[in-house]
Length: 477
Ligand SMILES: *[C@@H]1O[C@H](CO)[C@@H](O)[C@H](O)[C@H]1NC(C)=O
Ligand SMILES: *[C@@H]1O[C@H](CO)[C@@H](O)[C@H](O)[C@H]1NC(C)=O
Ligand SMILES: *[C@@H]1O[C@H](CO)[C@@H](O)[C@H](O)[C@H]1NC(C)=O
Ligand SMILES: [Cu+2]
Image (tube, rainbow, N blue to C red):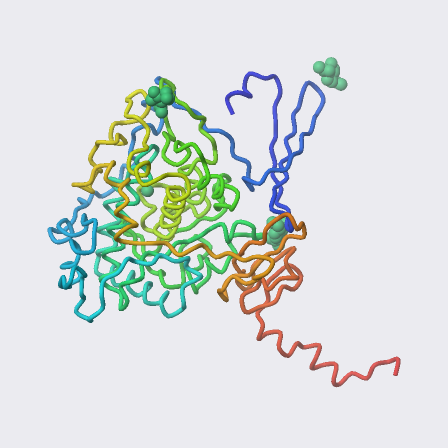
């Protein structure tokens, strides 16, 4: 907001969420002299208004986050590393190469597993679209990785070497997730499943997104008063730093917010590759061809980290929370959808911001090694081989006026009154959660929306008043 600092007024910005409308009302109050002027406009991008980001001045280099990888001073360093076996196979870019990692044998060019199955591409689905059985298998495999120490060992690769704040951000995380997914798949009864994604656009339009079924015991777990995850498949997940539980502090960061359809559509149909791969924390000396639009992929991804907060609020600790993995699978979905929509096969492997040390640190450069993901270089993670050979995404849950169903008992189809606006899928809300404005919809999971709250169904089956009525003789009879 530097541009406003030159003006002689103060301003206050508020954004209001409007149920039954896919827009947000943004109200800005300008105080000029003794008077207040109010500007109101509707915008579809942000529930809490975000503005263009600022570049880093040379003079701020030392004090800002530029080129820094923050780790707390009292951190007890444990060297992140890959086992020789991991190092040998997890860099593979096709199924033949990785086959021995699954104890398979190549027969007729295919990798045949000991179970007799052929190793296929991993299928990445939205968490709420998986069957309960398959989701539980995946949760079980994560828990095997957690208790064996493998999850934290891999988490430290991100903790100490994760690349952020620039062009290589999306590439480093793509390769990291690919490796994590291969490890996960070796532990699944059905290795065709890959890392599910958390499509937080499904939660974005809820009256209170943190009341979503995704943050219930069934999926990611609920938190206690201190923000510690107290139930669900990932409770008692000891962090890399030795805390007994994952921490989430919803609402402690005002810039937190979910992804939404408007921003996802804007990204995957964008004609400027910089909105996906551009420098997100460039120096003021950078000869840039784009603005630091608040909707750029890395920023939009950041707001979700800030929404969950706690471990997710900082890059050194974010991999403690399984949400990190599911959210990054969604970020990779956006990246892939953009590639399919806007680039041909050659552009997918070549379009990338030019190396320039007036812009970003050299580890973002096209030809640079990926820290701790050697032998991969940044350029290698632009390869078509990822989705040609190793994994593919299922479509995000969608619905229409004709098909008002999101094909999951955890989702419902929201149909805007305005016929111009397309219907979209939304997550159901957990018991006790806020359902304001949606009582016409099956918004409550195994419950009913009564006085703006989701109330459990079986506590409604025989309401007290129904029992009483049998014994009360109406006075007007
Ligand atoms: C603002 O109001 C005060 C008190 O009414 C007055 O003394 C002052 O001159 C006003 N300032 C402007 C810029 O109008
Ligand atoms: C429920 O959500 C609405 C919309 O965000 C909000 O205005 C209201 O205060 C919330 N109600 C409660 C009890 O939190
Ligand atoms: C900006 O565009 C010019 C001309 O196309 C190009 O030479 C330059 O490398 C671009 N700079 C960045 C940072 O993308
Ligand atoms: Cu990261």
